[in-house]
Image 1 (cartoon, rainbow, N blue to C red):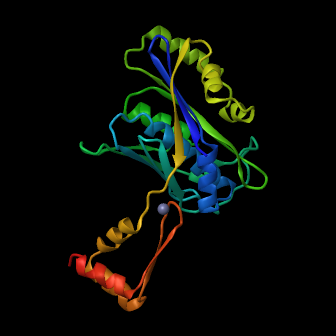
Image 2: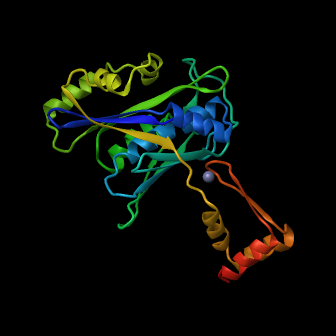
Image 3: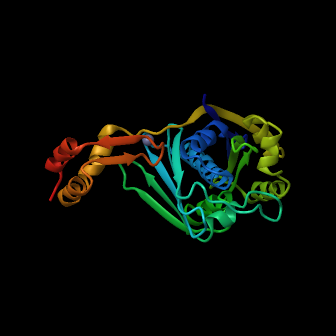
Length: 293
Ligand SMILES: [Zn+2]
């Protein structure tokens, strides 16, 4: 099963809005990483933000890595998305836990803490683009919006939400991003800013079971909106035996020799899907031969 991402633009072409329902993606992350609710919400929001940002990349085969380096109990949270609608991620401490915040919600902001958000865009043929901004609230949507304003000079509104059920499964997940295009005039900007004050919480809209299109029309109700396209998005891990071998070979001869003498074998877990790759002495020896001094 796949999730759906919907792209839309105001009829005047001045404001774009993308919405995604990411319940299947966030549930896949929860299954792979066995996250408790705090980590499910944080990683889920970051995956949702990443898949929205990935869908904005025009270059074919490009990808982007979003990383939150905070000092909160969750540790590092990372998500990688590409322009084909595939996303994957992990959280350093999937079992971190905190009491609910003062409005009775999962306290993602305190879970992340203070630090910085980094964005690396791998554009294949061009030089990678690297941006970094201080974490604002740690609620992730705000942080991505701040990144866009600060690093790309694109005024944005980003709302991301994950609802976790009592049995720790994902009840709802999704979000949207609104961006003001560079040729937007003052009148439409003010009009949107005024409308934005009344936008309901994304979790509320998710709870009501709004479709992407309904959500877009609700958020942009003061504007005429055209739906451009709907695409499938998924949690996909592309790890492989070949990749793992390359990673070991890149350690260099000395490191591989140490593994051979100290452990005799190597078991590597994929950080994104927890798949185990096991290499015995003989296999490690082959990699040793290929490695650099
Ligand atoms: Zn994997």
